[in-house]
Length: 103
Image 1 (cartoon, rainbow, N blue to C red):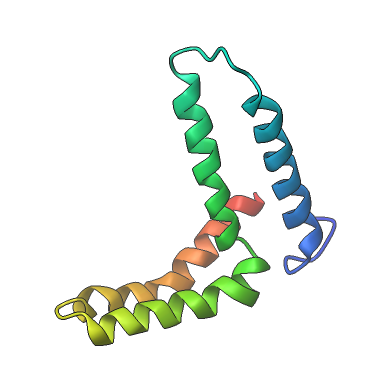
Image 2: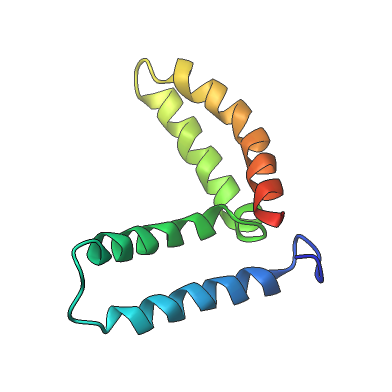
């Protein structure tokens, strides 16, 4: 991200490709030790964090996430008092996450 802009797709795509290739290479191992299957599952779930990284978050995930949260807050009883502060805090959390990820 230092070489490109924060909104560039290149660092995002390179990072995603490296993670997917790594999982694919390790996924072929049949004889896992006791802790390795849980680590592989954790690494697969971490791929979901790519939905929260810029620029994918800014272009796709943000609008869907806010629409989903607004829908829940308006249709599910007693959730608005949790979701409304969460919606207000999400941009702050995203800035903190992006800052930590870049450093």
